[in-house]
Image 1: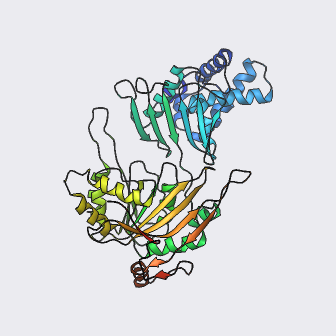
Image 2: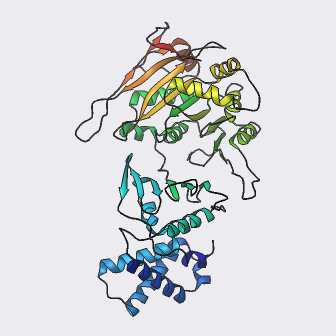
Image 3: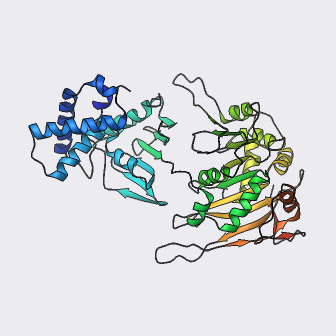
Amino acid sequence: MSLRSRITGPEEQGSARPGREDGHLVAVFRAKLLEEIDLAEMSSLATADRRARLERVLGHIISREGPVLSGAERTQLIRRVVDEALGLGVLEPLLEDPSITEIMVNGPDAIFVERAGRVEQLPMRFASHEQLMQTIERIVSTVNRRVDESHPMVDARLPSGERVNVIIPPLSLTGATLTIRRFPRAYTLPELIQLGSLDEHLLMLLAAFVRARLNVIVSGGTGSGKTTLLNALSGLIPGHERIITIEDSAELQLQQAHVVRLESRPANVEGKGHITIRDLVRNSLRMRPDRIIVGEVRGGETLDMLQAMSTGHDGSLATVHANSAEDALMRLQTLGSMAEVQIPFEALRDQINSAVDVVVQLSRGADGSRRLAEIAVLVSHGREPFRIATVSRHHPGPPGPDRAAPGWFEHLPLPRPVADRLHLAGEGVPPAFGVTDTADPAHVREALA
C-alpha cells in the first residue's frame, strides 16, 4: 500500500462516541498534513521515525493555524490524525495495548476486547459502516487480499503476526465483523507454573515425555492455551535436532537454531495457488525432520501426521480441538477418515494406537484461567478400542471473592510400559507419580470407538 493511500485513508473513526465535528476536524488536519510533507522522503523512513516526523509536522500546523486546544486535547488530536495516517484509527491504541489478546468488532457500533481471559465491551465506535469497511480493506490489502461481495470472508496473518478474520454482509447480518487475534510472547513452562496452569511435578513429567520422544497431542477448546503450551513444550526439544513446524497461521516461536517454519497458503483472488496443511505435512517428510510440530490438525492431514509419528518421527507434537482426552482420540479418528484414502475406522484406530502416546487436555475456567486439566497416556494396542490411563488431573476449587478458582492437581501412577520407555531414554519417573503394574479400572478407562 502506498504512503499516499494510507495518509488519505478513511475519515476519523473516533474514540468514545465521536461526533461529526470531531471527524471533520481530524479530516481537515489530515489534509493539511498531506500538503506539508514530502511523501518521497517519508517513504524512506522507518515506521517509528515516520510517526515521529508526522507528529512533529502536525504539531507545527496546529500551533500555526489553531484551533486553541488544551495540552490533553492537542495530544489526542495529534494521536488520532497520525493513527489515521499510519495505522488503523480507533483500533491503533488497542493494538498497542499488550494486555489485549483479542479485538472483536461486531459492526461499527460494537467493539469488544479480551483481557486476562475476560471479554469486555469498550466505549468506542466507528463513525459509520463505510469507515469500518475502509479500515478492513486497509488491513487485508497489506497481505494482498481483498474483501467484497464476491469474497466476503478473509482469514489471514498480518506481517506483524496477528491473525485476522473478516466476514461481511450478506453473510454477516450484524454488519462487517472483524476479529484480530494477537499472540502474546512465548511463555516457558516455569512461567506457566507461576500462572497456575500446571505445577512443578507436571513440568518434570512433560519434560521427560518430550526428551524421551513420546508423541504428544495437545487438546482443548478455543482459547484454552493450546498454542501457548505447544510452544512451551517445544522449548524442551534439544537444540541440535531439526524441527519442522507446520501451521495455518504462523504462531509458534521456537528458539532452537535448526527450525524450518512452514505455513499454508490460501487461494489467490483467481482461486489458484492453494497450499494445504496436508501438502506441507507430506512435503515435510522429505525434509529429513527429527521432529514435526503441526499447529493444528483439522482434516485429512491427520492421517499423514499419524503415519509420520508411527514411522520414525517420534517426539512429534500437534494440537486438536476437543473437549476431553477421549474426545481428542475420537476426533483424530474422524479427521483421519477425511483423507482421500478410504481407510476403515478399525485401521485408523490401529494408526492412532501406534502413533499417539500422550494426550494433554487443557481447559479454560470460568475465571478466564487456562489450566492443564488432564494428562492421559494410551495403553491400548492394535485395533482394540482406545484405552487411556489418567496420570494427572486438575480439580477446580470453589471460586473466591475475585472469581479465581485455583483448585489443585492430582498425580496418579504411570503404567509400567510408559515408565519403561522413560527409563530406556534415560529419563526418570517423577516421584509424585510412581508406577503401577496393574490396569486398575479406576485408573485406566476405555474411550468408545
